Amino acid sequence: MSTRRKHTLGRFRTARAALSVLTAFGTLAGAALMGAAPASGVQATDKMAESRIAPGVEYWQFDIPASHGMARAHVLDVDLSDPRTSVGLLYPGAVGARSVVSALADGAGAVGGINGDFFNISETQHPGVEATGAPVGPAVARGRALKAAVPNGQRFGPAMPPGVTTEAVLGVGSDGRARMDNLRLDGEVRTPQTRLPLGGLNQYALPVGSVGAFTSDWGSTSRVRSTCGTDTSRGAPCSTDTHEVKVRGGRVVESAGTPGSGPVARGTTVLVGREAGAQELRKLSVGDRVGVRHRLVAAASRTPFRFALGGYPVLRGGAPLPGLDSVTSAVRTAAGISDNGRRLLLLSLDGSPEFRTGLTIAEVAKTLRGLGAREGFSLDGGGSSTLVSAATLVAKAPGAESVTVRNHPSGGMERPVPNGIGVFSLG
Image (cartoon, rainbow, N blue to C red; front, side, top):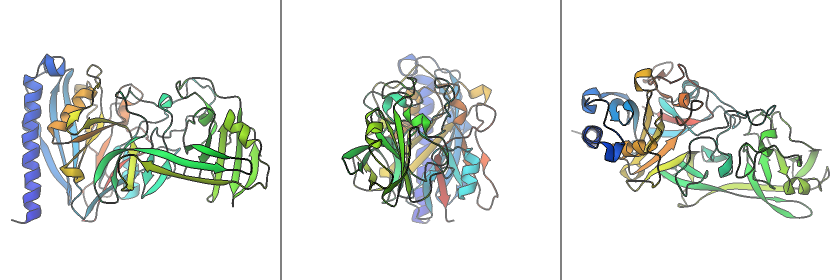
């Protein structure tokens, strides 16, 4: 038997053993761990179904007796040590845009994928302001930084664990290993008068008093939303002190009193300022020299990310993070990392009526740990009715023309999302 075949069989024996642990967790843990007795004694291993999607990529599903009822999990098990297998960012080609996961996967030629980060889904608190559809956290595609994180108080989604910020990401580095980290924006605007720290990159919300940069990666969506809310209140009014300049070839070519919309041409950077940032931009005249630089800096590793997207960690070093919600149950999407970053588990819960009670975030962490993950990361997919239906997992068999939605989105159909994790195969 080949070494690869032994490795594959070993992984599935481990998975089956882990599912047995999950079953015991559901049927025996009781109120002390789960908050209530499980809905039934269905054995997870009896419900498991598996299939090979591509070399190094397996799909399987299983049921979890949870505190609020039975949940069904759909999993893509990705072996990153297989040279034919990789993962990357799925997105519609612009930060401020959305599409359904199946279309994103098909368009990129992926064999599978799940939805990604939480995003600016609505603007009910700012009537007349366009919802951008842009994600909350940083995003990296093919090694290029697409955007940075919005202020903590401007995020959408359920509360994060204590000490976690919107800079949290999950991704795969240039070494081919998956990891969690934080990505901080390091940037500067140089004008004839001063040097300003850059407060944002292609973000739907800028820090109060800052200047943010918008590039062609942003798309054509209005930039007005970036000056609404505050660092601590997403629903605070939009700023009345704003300014925008366009920079091309290192010089100001246009200036306006309010943020605009429409595509940003390649080679052009639009600088949007609010409050103190707006006051600095007003000092600029057409023809003035302006320099802009930006990059995303990882907190824990010097290995650059090949791809990354936002969310928040729920499991570190095999232990659930303190303060995880153990009460609110919903349909969830999450990712787990094991084998020192060489294995990535992409998990999405089923949203059909019989399974819609889902899991709490604490149960998600315990589920990922039961599957062998040492690190776990929560993605968009639960916590409120406006986010539940975004939990979509798709997979495509080699040679198929399109992917198949494996789970049942809780809204009855796929919801357009800003990004996701795509699984790719050369096999």
